[in-house]
Image 1 (cartoon, one colour):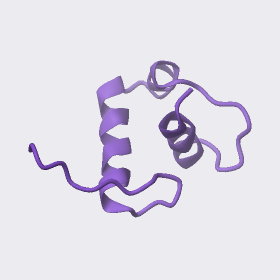
Image 2: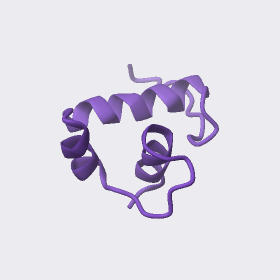
Image 3: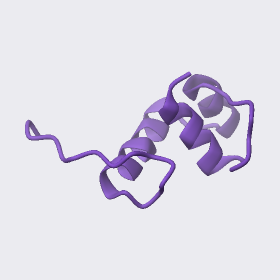
Length: 62
């Protein structure tokens, strides 16, 4: 389980969670595609709006 999967679960489901779902299971439970969850993770990384996600610098190759 990656730190991004844990952070997203805490952001979308329950902030104080101690057990988590992987991206595939969370996408099935929420009835969205995995790519949508990955885009949410990337959004929080690049914007820095949520302290659960470490801020990433913009990629130079884009």
